[in-house]
Length: 271
Image (cartoon, rainbow, N blue to C red; front, side, top):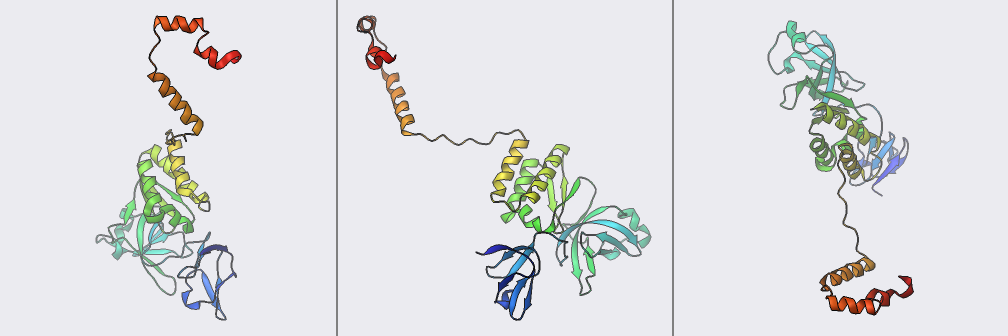
């Protein structure tokens, strides 16, 4: 089995060279350091099912400004470590006295983790075309470890959400999701995102979410063509045969009545 549920201390492998995140090595053996899903194919790592976001350079995250300090905005990124957005990382040149004019306490931003040093000083940047100051829409939070499921294989899940809700949806690696669009669409998108978070451990998630979205929109799922049984096939053939039989002439009808009719002969007393 390539994947399995593990808890801290569970033995994973003797292949120390394959050990990655979510593991630790002791006496030449690899163990899980967190509660989560262990992946044992080609590498050994454990994706936590809960816990805080640990920032890494290059991550796209959604943060909330908690303080405007001298030359830095202090940003909550749902991590044990605060993010620092230096004034020089703003997309245009501004003075330190103007900082609150552009981003104030309580504002949300979509930003990139520029660097993380050995002391876990997290530097952020807005000097990227994917980043922006969030001025409309809604932000919903999910467990950071559930982000891959929310995106889906090859982006399939997020693409479906966008298409069915007609909303723009941006997912931060820190588990914050920014949704913008019409109110009805945003309401549906929020419910779908939270449903995905609750049901990530259940198989058939994509099909289930697709059905949920269509049901909430009042759309009937496409019905499958009924299977044709031998009995049904015979009934169909019988109907087609009867349609080909020409109507009886007056003389033939009189003869049938005289003889009790064809159906009388076929059905007898059961008619």
